[in-house]
Length: 269
Image (cartoon, rainbow, N blue to C red):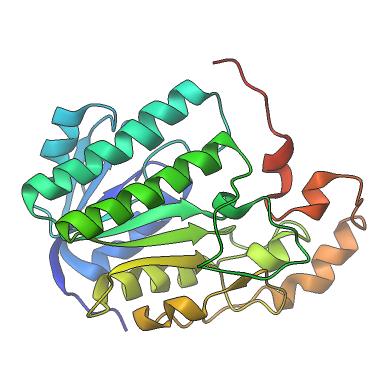
């Protein structure tokens, strides 16, 4: 059951892959869903507002945030890339977002962090939300920055944030790594709903994963949000094994949790 506790929600990154999925789902969580991206989006539907804004533009971001009750922040560069675009969207952009939230009195944010914040842990390890970051990429570094910035804004200004370290959210797992990292779109919506509606969120780091038997992440430290995953990668395991080769342990992507991000780049500045 989805409980509406906010009149107006802001969804950033609404033109992206997961943004489009959540645009279809988050309308159930509010009376008005404001969707935003730097890219062109489809026209507003019933119960929607569409705002085109570049996260690196502080004035545009301030106007984007004005009047909303909570924010689901998916906006930014979502893959490994050169540092310049990551800096503009994921570092300056997240600062602009939290400054706008502070100025306009928004007290709850769901921040789309990433499993790549901890990508240099081995696949043979199980980590908790209390283990220190070990980013596998510049992208992972930018998400670690966002987690730290959100912590600062909670400690100083009381803006509650759920840093959701999204694993691999696709219709089904594509490879053996995703048997551990898979997050169904239904569970993604359920996790965001839990973060928006839990009475006390505080500053929480949560691994975004379904109820997979194979797992590298212990979510016990996030039970207070009330997230109970309904789906599992287990039913896909036989098919994934049949179509993929056995892991090559000379390849860092098969050894470390970050997978292919460990060998992406380098990129021109």
